[in-house]
Image (cartoon, rainbow, N blue to C red):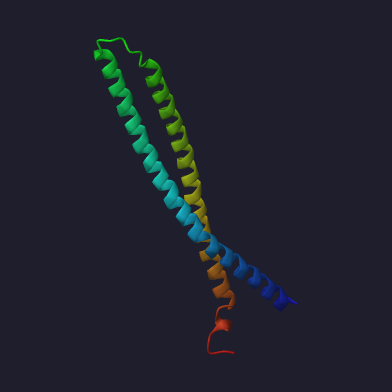
Length: 128
């Protein structure tokens, strides 16, 4: 009876390890994409700041009274939203890193457990 429980447990462990191995590349790829988007968000925020500064400077030096304040306000509102999205992405990326770390840790733990139980030893290529 203990033998069937060991086979069932090792079967679940192999399945879990397979799922973890399947998820790891997707998590890593998602992490890379989130990092790339965050860099783009930072660059966009810097451009918005530069443009808002330039619009304020133009508005101060204009002979004709152009009201650029609404545009500056729109830019600053857009910048605020970019910062919010960047914070959300940063939190998501941190969760992905923790998930990736936990997946790696769990995979190593299960592999060690499987090796200790002799599952890998019984699957050697020299045995039928």
